[in-house]
Length: 214
Image 1 (cartoon, rainbow, N blue to C red):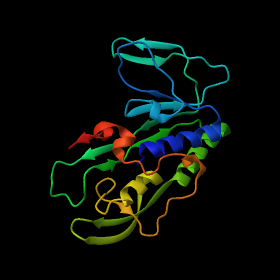
Image 2 (image 1 turned 30 degrees about the vertical axis):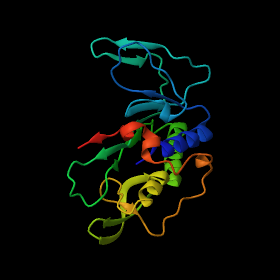
Image 3 (image 1 turned 30 degrees about the horizontal axis):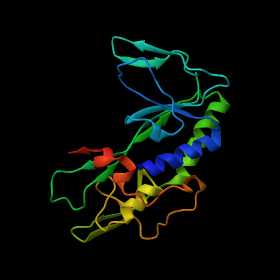
C-alpha cells in the first residue's frame, strides 16, 4: 500500500540501486505512443510496467490494432517488473468503523530466469528495498467502536508514508482494517528526503484522491 510519496521514494530507491529505471502505462490507448517515465508518479494509470533499459536502448513502439494496445517491439528481455498501484476508496456505507477514504492494496510482481544469477539478484534487490521502506506489522482495531483486537503480522506491505497518513487521524485505516502499531515510527530513509511526507491525499492524488467509491 503506497501513497504518492511512497511511490516517489520507491522510484528513487530503484534508481539508486540500478541506475536508470523506466516506467510506462499499460493498457489501451488511442495513439501509438508510450512515453517513458523515470518516476512511478509520472504515469497516469493504475497498472504500469517497469524495466532496466540496456545501454543505448531506444524504444520502438508498435500497436496491436485489434486490442488497441501499444507495446515495445524491442522490449529488453530481462529485468522487468509490473505494478498495480494502490487506490484510495470511499465506502458508501456511513456506518463503517473508520473514516473515509481507505487506501486499498496494490501489488508488484517480477519474473526471472532461475538459472541466471544476475536476474535473480535483480529480484532479490527489489525485495530488499521493499523490506526497508514498508512494514507488515499492524494494530487491528475499529476506531469508531473503540474496540482493539491487538497487533498482527500481515502479508500486506504498507509504505511508511501510508502508515504516517493513517496515524495522523484517529479513525483512519488501511485496507479498511489496519492501523500502525503504537511502537511504529517514521524511519530515517534517504529516499524520503525533501518529500512532503505530511501531504494529505488530496495533494498526493489530486481532486477526489484519484480513487473510487464503493
